[in-house]
Length: 308
Image 1 (cartoon, rainbow, N blue to C red):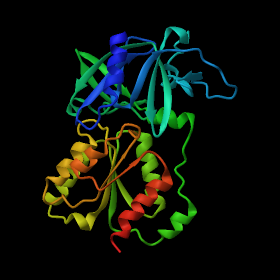
Image 2 (image 1 turned 120 degrees about the vertical axis):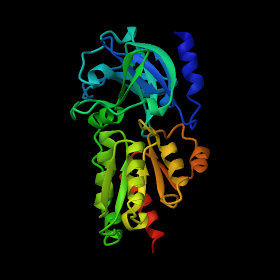
Image 3 (image 1 turned 90 degrees about the vertical axis):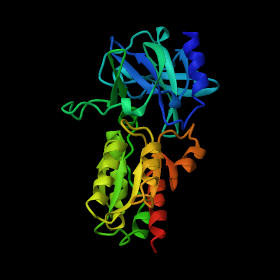
Image 4 (image 1 turned 30 degrees about the vertical axis):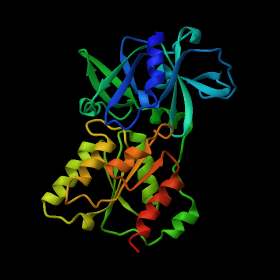
């Protein structure tokens, strides 16, 4: 176990290599799950927890870790499973999502696997809307599920994605009636948050579940003879997505003469370890960490100001 923990700590400093490293773990049963190593700060044996009255039922308590109080979420309960039981016999994955550090209680930590994003796939069709998955993959003939942590966090501390009235009023009438803001994100919650934010400014949106789906749409658009500028205002893309990540999506857009001028903003929960050099390398126009509706609205406003 110590070698796994050491490996996690070393690899969390790596980002922007156009690959995915999954830290595999288990919860209450035999099913394997994965979390992107780039979001992981460290993995530790669960320390003593202090329970607080009024906490959400999936929050097992507060841990003091390196001088900071961090809430610890029972990940099994959060996805609708049973409690993991005695926390002292479990491990905590310390990870950063959407500018906040969280602890995720898991039963065991297995190993780290280096993969290509093309080997990561969206959840199977027919799996419904109530699941907590952003993607699935197959490792050693075993299904590995990648949990939609953003959905879990939104249920614990909801974000209503309400844009300040001042910003809404400033943008009244600016949104073109016949153009779209494209949104690519593998999290259903993130897609909804971005959509609600952008539509409050008066923009129409088109939604995509991963980078490949979005790029295919763009390719078909220009192949059909439609001028990109007549249809699309900008693209707001997550970085971590199955099939094709946001880095690759941006690079493919820049390498296509008919798409290369598209305004691309990367919008990701990888705020703590974000590599700005990589954004510059692939040619993104802007980057903001998730999720603040006013910041997102102002970033869209900045794009529209260039049209004036």
